[in-house]
Image (cartoon, rainbow, N blue to C red; front, side, top):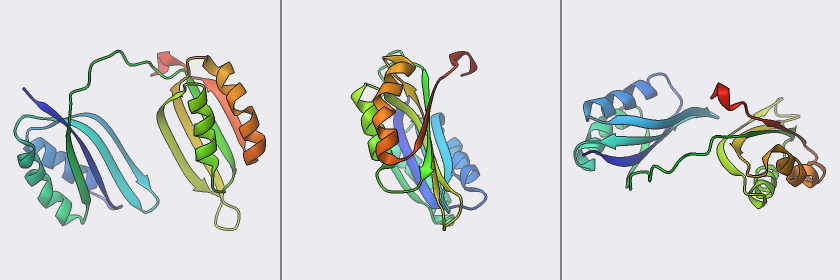
Length: 175
């Protein structure tokens, strides 16, 4: 029986990171169940849920040479297998954009939490250059009250943060 673990890998972005990490996991007999891999600024980050057949030490040893060769930081933790409870698909997408300033993420996600919005995916980035940075954030998640409840929850955040916020339904047939 295979056990489950969460792997995070972070390092300066360069070609070959995904290849080196996935090859090391393959060599250790692991299977990647869920993964998110992305460039963040000048860095590259990997987060994965994986299954491993042997002890976690052998997985760590397999990853060690790949991560050292590319000067990556790695963290590997065993976790209890997912309970298998039915996942609720996203039904709502929130897009936020405006002049960059501290507090946008905290206030938007705080308002979403108040209406029971479960964030499934959040991506953000800066655009527009150093003289006029624009913050852009996209959130997908599950809102028990649907789009209307999310719209209502975010109405005051729009004015307080001076940002544009668009709320739209997610077409679950496209997932």
